[in-house]
Length: 293
Image (tube, rainbow, N blue to C red; front, side):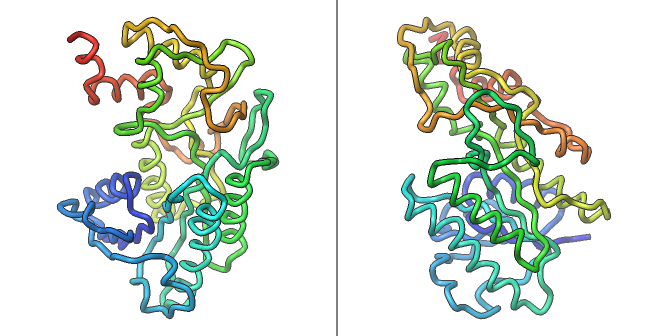
């Protein structure tokens, strides 16, 4: 059955998801302020600033079977997060609830930044969200806005997303930097293509009649220390680490995310660990050839 999927905030993640859904024969509409990036993707563009949805009626957004909210904040500032996440999502929901035929489900792309654990604790969907950062708190506010809304909704909390064009850690390693062995900082990550794979999979699950949970953790199958990830990258790139960074991450947390719930739905990871995922990024991004030159 051909579905219509509306992707709000159709950036890199949205375009990748859109292409996957298009390959399955579905119709995809992408909402973003500047739609030039959607040219030649097959995604139908809709130029829109979410601020303009304030007080809007049902005609402001097209009918869709599924809505995926993948908006990114413009800046790492409280006001930008407030606008992008709780405020933006509430505006979208206020329009969708006016549709004669509302969407079967709304998906909100959230983040594991909602967790504040710092001692390497294992966290799951049942763990308390104890973030002390404004970003984590505002993500939680947005999650609750969806889960408390009458429309069916599912939150997917993605860990650190890496993949094509998301290679900051690789460049740090090339520059000779590495995370300290102690204090131990666990990092959780997921390849971009598994993010979109999970979202497409959950849509297929609902279409097949499988019940969906309100919340899923989206991370790969191997929580690992940041030092070990960077050491492995250095070995692949044949570079020597010359500078130890005590806090290479912008916000220090240390936790181990458990992805059991999403795996129990039958999802099979394309890149189960950072090794498979970064091997693809290193190869496709030309980093290995660069080191040979």
